Length: 284
Image (cartoon, rainbow, N blue to C red; front, side, top):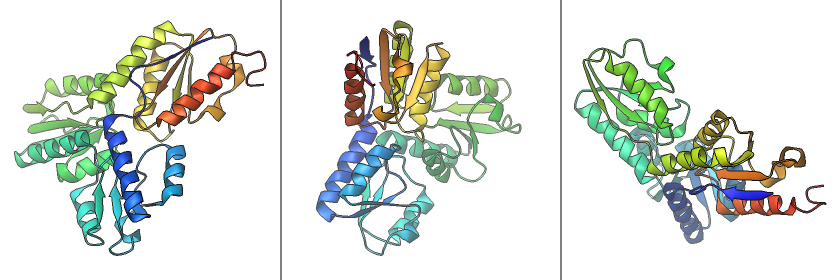
């Protein structure tokens, strides 16, 4: 059995940067309160909690004047204001690419555009972007979710960084036919596109694709979708212990892809597990 890892894969620049800043803050303070899960990977969160991370849902749960961490997904201006009312000790791990979306949304709002954010309305990154987009902003996860009243006036479009480019293109095409004015910022992260392209290129060359990453990770889910669309048997797991010998059996070429929030150590564990499966008694 041959194992091939998609390149690039795993932690993107923004997440790697955020985790590095969080680890440095934990060394400095010993304990820090994360405003929301700093990374969509349960195993990595468990590791960070052992180092002193405490995950909370809102600023009110942070003790006054205790250090707080803003995750890579970013937060809304209103949430930031609430956080500043609790503590001045803030470590901002917002991904620069996410901050770019926030700035573009604020710019379009200032110039009088009514915004549509292409993305998942429940995702924390999108919730933060909406805070910059202003009242009346809408979210569309696909072309069928584009608001029926979106075709009039000046429409501005930004995109969640982990979206599929094909979805953005479909929504833009739908709006072009009847919008009075449409201004689009393609704010999909380059790292996201690179990982999606890597899966597209690898899938036709393997007998099965294993995508490793948190089940709450949007970008990992997109990799799974792309792999499945290629017609290749695809398995989504969070860690190597989820792997079953029955799925591997009979496959001569296995591909591995990992979401942008999947740490390197989880990828290496999966590779080691697959290598052990090459032996007659492997994964018994």
